[in-house]
Length: 493
Image 1 (cartoon, helix red, strand yellow):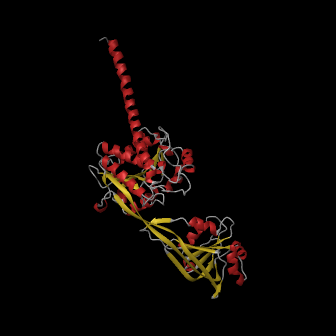
Image 2 (tube, helix red, strand yellow):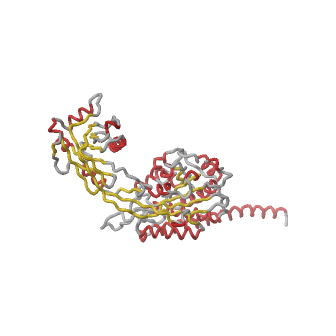
Image 3 (cartoon, helix red, strand yellow):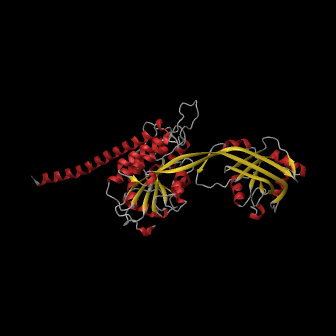
């Protein structure tokens, strides 16, 4: 063969090798997107009835995930033989049941018209009897604990952030806060409607049973009239220079009760055991729950399927696990967590933090995955929680090694409290959410203002999975980096 022919052949091979590599990459991407779509299709199907905790939809969700994770090669990560794979979480749902308010002046009963007051509690039943009333104006100055102890703080609701002032007075020692509703936009009916919705908490959480009471301005005028005062005169006092809280010639008896329902639900925990465990671990998590049947009849579509929020996150979590299990063994343990009750207040993540399978201070990094089927492939990656943990430099190092771009700024941190990573951050676990789908704030906000938490968040033709596929590969790289003691020494924690 001539030198010319050899040169031509060599050039052809140089062209063919990259082309073959590109074909393989494209084929692998198509396969990955197909796997993601299969998970989202299954988990957002109407037969799952919106994946509500404590329902058959939960049981079906966990059966599906359990089979997937077992087949991938994960083992139970609960570290509890009595509860393999599924870690029990008990929720308490409370809603207002009854309330009453009675007032006296110098021992004489004062009478109010029906519909003048509303009393609410966070506990099962709360009661105070014949407690003196202390007028605190607009709450700009919080009295001392000695001044508030055993008293009802009467608060004018003229300024914004009324609930913040109520909480501050209760924390400072008030037995109850009685808020005057003299703003046309604040009515007893609005408050009652808002609070009629169930409130959820972990059964292990001790609720204080604080009393929050409300009274209309005409109702307060009726109470104050025998003493020659009115709501207007109290407001004038509160607005005068040098105002200081002062007792009123009133005593209050306030009572509120709630009805209580217990919900038995579960977190699911899987694990890839490290070949040289050093006690440190990496955690990946995504919430499995959504809102169930969220729209009353006669609406045609009554189910909140949660295709993007968060069947897409579960799909990415599962495919990260698959690729990690197929690849070379890692030195450190890696845990996979599917949380319950995220939509009810990050409660599954809080339950995990209360009873973790590994000490929380041994978790080097936690990567939350939520609502990621939004953006196309090739976008930069955003970090929700940027600047709030000590793992930013390592994330940047992985991005550099993977030739991935990270977005600058911390604008997305406005969402940090709305995802499971926040619950872990309260225990000093370095938890962030990293996704290319979140790199475009306008795209995220469009979802939040559109399908988010609505029945319209179902599987739609042409769902965008390019960014989600990118997320899988980057999360695999991040996990391997943190699971490598050479790259992240134990002392780095």
